[in-house]
Amino acid sequence: MNKIITTSWDDGHPLDFRIAELLEKYDLKGTFYIPKKNPQNKVMNENEVALLHKKFEIGGHTLNHVNLKKLNNSNLVYEINGSYSWLSEVTGVKPLSFCPPFGAYNTASLKIMYLAGFKVIRTTQLLSPDLLLPVHYTTLQLFNHSSFTYAKHLLIRGRLIDFKLWLNSGATADLLNLIDYYLNHIDMNGGCFHLWGHSWEIEKFNLWKQLEIVFKHLSKRSEYSYIENGHLSDYSQTQNKLS
Image (cartoon, rainbow, N blue to C red; front, side):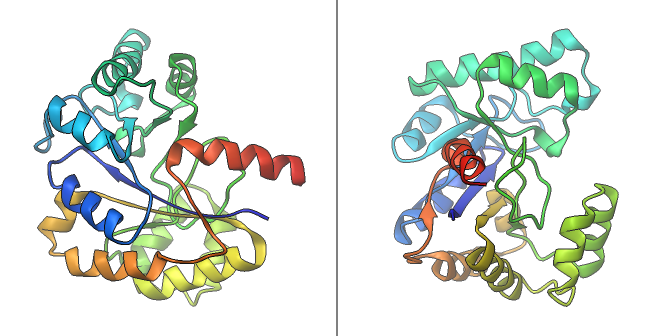
């Protein structure tokens, strides 16, 4: 029974290096999804991307941080294949993981992601401890959402199984309580605890202390495997064989 802890961090802001330092401090794994350009926020340069890659996985996040659901086929190919080629050149290795900006994707874009060479697709779907999905959902975002936001998120996305699981937590919105609840669920059933966030958002809302508390809480669990997002498919395949 696989028990996984992984983390991922979107948008490529230079403050990602502060997250990287904390990940190293608590011996946690992380994947950083970085676009080449980002009109919404500052993004690290290519030298910084290469430096971060020395210790952490870098995943695709399109070239220009765009909503893939709004693009035609040729622009989808440009943004997704371009991201794969750009990261391959900057890091010297072929990227394994891809995260659609804003969590927005459709069947056409998903097909192009896999054809480009990406092996793992990570969404922004919350409150899932599931490891056996065609795309990889997340468990919690490092952000203080309300119970109303969690409920709306799950209902809009039609994930009734995750909605029922969250209701059994008492529909709590307390981040540490949710972490314990989902880890207890994974302890009994196996699965993946996936924490994600944005460094620029953590800075904006002064969540750095909370982030370190969470990292400390997740660290040194001997029964768990700590992996980067790119290895999620390996564990999913193993679990499928055991099911």
